[in-house]
Length: 234
View 1 (cartoon, rainbow, N blue to C red):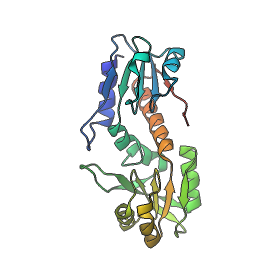
View 2 (view 1 turned 90 degrees about the vertical axis):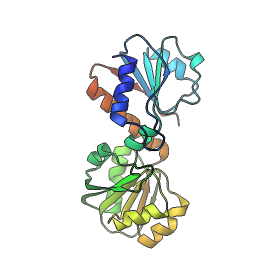
View 3 (view 1 turned 60 degrees about the vertical axis):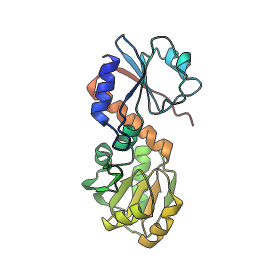
View 4 (view 1 turned 135 degrees about the horizontal axis):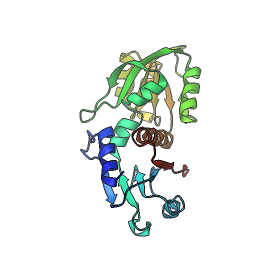
């Protein structure tokens, strides 16, 4: 598999950003085929040594802006994808995540540049605590919980943003729980008014989940490709 083929496949998976129009960026070219690919959210001080020790042919980065390309091993290819990754592999209208959580009867929630900011879906009834436990099972942990007042949850909103209007829109679509990356102060009044249970996964944690999802999607396309995911830096 060549680097151009990798770029094309990621663009096929994620499409162009509805907000910015950007797609996958070729940061450092590579002519030779790729057999070992590294995935990381962003550069760190030891990235070049990691690439050498793992004998990587190329690296995917979610954010590449602080990358020192001069320090990279010769011939290492680098590709990056920012906005489409956030829009389609994170806590938004993410069909892969909906399947993992067992959500059905999906409805889009919110809108920015023609792209839904999230989804509302139905699932088998759970208590708020059981919902938290399910999210902990899939994400490893959660960052914060506002219990709200529902005794049972049958429709939840999964959204990559949080404000007063989005919480109220979610309630209007029947959701009694709101799952997002980080709890936002401007939405607190709406949480009180609607009695919504709110659960914050954590921004970095939700991004790492998205990186793991990208790994699974790439393995489906290239089963023989060796993919190494960088360990969390925090």
